[in-house]
Length: 605
Image (cartoon, rainbow, N blue to C red; front, side):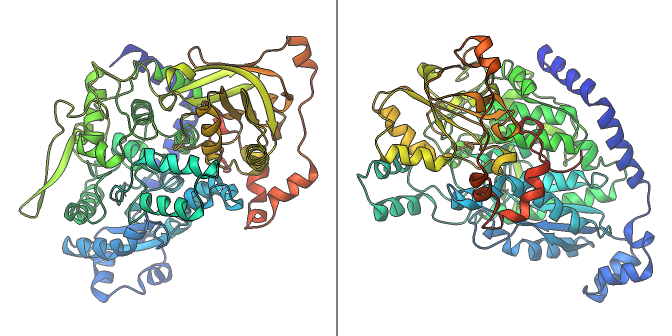
């Protein structure tokens, strides 16, 4: 292991000692109980098994066979979750053949940022993660299960399911992905049409045709955004059946991998030495996930989500840990928006297995962690295939067949990972440097102030952005309006940048894993609604962003800056953000949410 990785891990352990110890004590107390069907009252058990066939009731009560909870994010509107429709039947049949039972413990919501992008519904997006965690907890709270299979794939869904699972950390768990859709039009063409639409060069018909060619079938979107970053991190944490992340939903191997997840969870339930999910997800496993994120230039959203996931397991991390780890972890992958390839091309040249092997060889990932399969993290350097209707695994290719997509550790795209921490008089922020050309890593320009993304879009339509500027889009944090993604701002800002102007954005909102080539200092904390310094910036103030050294400052004398009072959101704006499209139901979450750097959690850690 690299010494710096060990030192960062030790720091995390020291910071987490009280909370991690308390968490482990709680789950070990839960483990010491009798299984649900033997412990609950007879009426409780009767209710739990009432709808099962007689033979299944016998298995649970008399034979004490494993009863598996299925928590599913299925709905048939979202392309990534449509494949889950038939998974419960597959799982039940596979369990039956192995003498076990499986029940759908509950369903959780799954919303799509692609649908709500730039709309009021996006203000529910981040909070949907904790809602999903609570939904999972409600299903599992019946407390009659011996293990769990978690079915989810997209942006907030996997983090929400994992947070929920960790609150039942005394049980073994396996996450079951469904895979990406087939490749549609290339992402460069898609982005070009968006920019043309922003300039009025094509109409809505052409734009819809382009978008429908990109998003056209079952499975996740094929760019390397938050959803596909989820899958990479699940592999790196050892919570999948190895190699299952990026296989198409209708590939023959997909059903076999799902059945393998059933077989494995049953083995894990029956093996008294199995480490439950709450112990499996330890400090080393969290560091492995962080390393995988940095090595692939993954979604900036995970600097929020994985902080929350770690806290659910009693582990305390912050953006300084990501920043310091990035110095030790090279960038090994170039997948859109960091490159031209999509996740299917990434998978074809080795995918997660290639990256994990390289990180292990470099000493950037811990090799001796526990995973859901018995052979440990080395299993995740293997790629699944089918021989005579049987699953088998083979090593990832030793060499890259396309070094524009994936590289070995001795020839990285960059010596440091794809995400950086920015610090200065504006606060703390993160930037995805892997998506930004090096000649834009340092930018200095006057500020233009916007209190909503609609204000910026109007300024673009009115021709007011034809100059060098840094857009300060504030009151977009979790406390203000749920921290929506501002991805809809990427096309107009890209248009201005492509005209030769210096352009960047500073915001307490999110830009997601689909952020483009415009420098974006995002997740600014403290946020404007909490009195953060981003609210002090005035029109025309010169801002300097330096992603090389990790700084972000308004260039103003210290006394003047100290004397300024931060702006306050108007009452009308507060009202606009608190009602309609269900936003009033999330008022308590906005009121109680922690900062982005603390994971934007709304529950008691």
